[in-house]
Amino acid sequence: MPLSASPVVRRARLGAELRRLRRRASLTLEQVCGRLGWASTSKLSRIELGQSRPDLADVLDLLDVYQVQPDQREVLIVIARDAATGRGWAKSLGEMGERQRAYAELEAGAACIVEYQPAVVPGLLQTPAYAHFRVAAGALLCAEVDVAADVRARAVRQEVLHRPDPPRYTALLDEGACDPVGTPLDVWREQLRQLVALADRPNITIRLLSRDAAPHGGIHPLTGFSHYSFPDPADPRTVMVETLTTDLRVVSEPDIARYERMVDWLLEAALPAEETVALLARRAGWPEVPGPRVPTDDPELVGPAEG
Image (cartoon, rainbow, N blue to C red):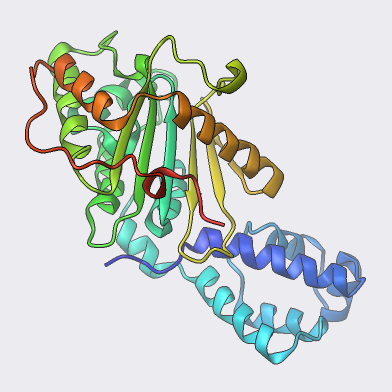
């Protein structure tokens, strides 16, 4: 069953709300912790940054200090309970490493996901064979990677696109992401055929940026990123930027706005969904796209966020 709200997103929202309330009360971290008898400011700092699972009793104490009115208090208590949730989410996501879990929590609670990838097929769209090839290649840099477990984790994450109420998902891929360079030919063809099949689902849109595509003003992302928006528009929209060794979570409104402008420019430059699917089918060895194509390049299905 789908989960109602991502704990990691709720923690970020709760932290931002508590920080705003503290500043409205003209209190410093030290003053609040002194009133509550907390040993150091690190506990409150981690709560405000959304870096720790909050204890409901601590949140209630903070709301008392900030003299929060009953109606707002009830809203924040609901958010705090969502932020403290862990057991149900852990069970639904199964065993996976920290990096994959960070993505899985965002994906499972998202209403809309937009991914840009310059070099590889996104994990949510990968076949088991392609995923194994990519993870094994990455393991050359990190011997601690459990390739089989990582591939299984990607399969668990992919279930989000096939549940009864899936998120709207758009993949924006540079043409090079679908090149066979370095990939076994059978694995590459199977992967392209899976992209064609997945693109027929009404919640999934795949669009290629050809090598001569020129996004607005010639600007182009330097690395892949994923943009998430959520059913509750008050939950902070989030961007994850993947790097070689770690992942950067972006939640600041000005930064998010820049990524959303970049998404709009990439959409303007990308091939239409139908042309993308036809091109992928030809590369996979299919002369025609199998089966009817449901148009999914409606702006309501591919836009980065609402509100």
